[in-house]
Length: 263
Image 1 (cartoon, helix red, strand yellow):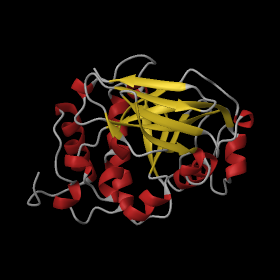
Image 2 (image 1 turned 45 degrees about the horizontal axis):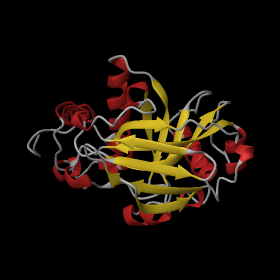
Image 3 (image 1 turned 45 degrees about the vertical axis):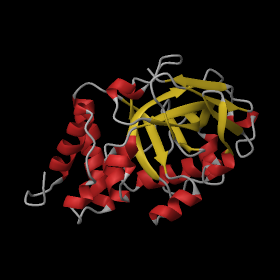
Image 4 (image 1 turned 180 degrees about the horizontal axis):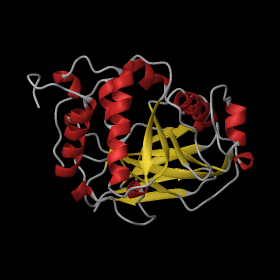
C-alpha cells in the first residue's frame, strides 16, 4: 500500500496481518503514513488483536516492550510499551521455535508474572502490582517484527503488537516473595557460548515497576489486567537471532533454565 492510498486503522491492520500470514517483511508503516501517532498505533494494535480473537484466538495476557532505560532513550520515551498475548503465541516447553512459520525470529529472556488478582490502574505502584502476582517464572519470548531488519519507529512497533510471535515459560514456579527480583540473574548462551548476562534490574529497575507502569498505561485505555493473565515483563538482554539447529539457553539463578531450539 503506498501513500496514494488512504491509510486507516483497518488498512494498517490489514497490511500487518498480511505480512505476518505470508511471512513477508516490509518497510515501516510510517514510511507511507507519517501521520501515524502513538494513540492511533494502539488502535491499530487493538484492531489487529480483535481480528485474531474473532478468528478463534484467546487473550491470555500482556507483554511489555522497551523496558530498559537504554532502549527507551533510543526510542525517545519514558515508559515501556504494552502489547497483547494470545494462546496461539504459547510455545510448549521443549517444542522448537517454528522458524519456518516466522520471518526473522529473535529470542530474549524475560521474568514472567502470572497474576492472582485483578490489577487495575491508575495509581498502581510496584508494591501493589507485586501484591497481585501469584507466580513468577523464567521465560523466553520469540519476537518477529514484520518490518525489514527490525527497523521501525515507536508507532510502527506498537501497531505491530510489539513484534509478538511466541513465548515459552520455564518449569520452575516461585512466589514473588521467594526471590530477589532485582538480583535474579540470567545468563544467555547460544550453542554453548555465553553471549549476554543481565539481572532483573535491567527491567525498569525492578520488574514490578514495569508491571505497575503497564497497569497504569492500560487503564488509560480502559483495560485492567485480569487474574490468571501472563505478563512478560520485558527483555533482560538484547535479543539474539535463532536459526534452524540453534540451541539457546537462558539460565536463571533461581528460576531454572529455559532452552529453545530452532526448527
